[in-house]
Amino acid sequence: MKQFDYIIVGQGLAGTILCFRLRQLGKSVCVIDKHREVTSSKVAPGAYNPMVLKRFTPCWKVEEQLKPLYTFINEFESHYNTQIHQPLKLWRKFQSVQEQNLWMEKSEKKRLTPFMNPVFIKNPHSELNADFGFGEVNHSGRVVLSKMISTLRDDLLSDASILDEEFDFKSLVVQKDKIEYKSVCAPQIVFCEGHRMSDNPYFNYLPLMRTKGELITVKLKGLNVSEQIKSNISILPLGDDVYKVGATFNWDDKDEDCSEEGKKELLDKLQALVNIEPQIIKQEAGLRPTVKDRRALLGAHPEHKNMYVFNGLGTRGLLISPFLCLQLVDFMEDKLNLDIEVDVKRYEKEFQC
Image 1 (cartoon, rainbow, N blue to C red):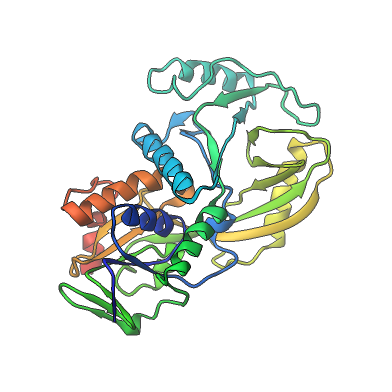
Image 2: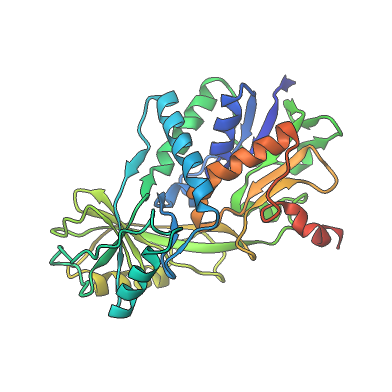
């Protein structure tokens, strides 16, 4: 039986960032993950920004999140001699004079000043409908998540540190100081399964919700936009007038299949924003792991203290995950406390039921 320091189940966004961090610290890690061409992490645009743009408010603890994000990006790119990060301007479309005034008011607040450019941007794109212009958000960008995930996976494959299979809970043996799974064992195991956590018999008491999101990739010939445009949808430039457009939010549909309803919703919103007939290149769908209180799920199992969870990152997973990863590693390695707002201890009553 091959010995590791950690077993990680799932190699989406959370599993990839956690695995990279642990290996940086010299820990040996075995990842168990069934390869799928389409997952929520792989189809996600990978764009990040420090604000809730619907209300012009800062994201939760954003000042503590940006440095770990940039540090992770720099260290990952340096380690693998590759580029996954793309600095990107983000323009929030104003819907009215009232929104312009609110933007000016909020941009003068001390906490928001670093993130909001107070100068209105007059619409320079003739094919975009934006009569009231835009506000520019600082500290925004994009990470190509599919490349990030595949780069680490290739590394794990090269040293036989990944099992490409569906996790079989019947093959899991949990002991006080050791976890065994088929041909591998480790003192500790971390579940980073995304929406599949609902099928995990150890952590399915946690209130994880599957929220379906759909996106389309389109050609908008002649648009010539290099900024990410955020309105009631997001238009993300991929180059050569190809754009990723999304996303929908569906709390009822629990499959990962593309729908005509989702495509129609996106096209209707896109055609109200852009005066160019789109050429659809592809449509994608995924299930986001979200939590009812809008906070992530980190921590140890109530009974098995060498069993952990890292999940519930939601729509802002890229921005928040490096920050939470540092917390989780400190918790597992040095027994430091987790932030009470993300610690799964807040749901212990549900486990007891």
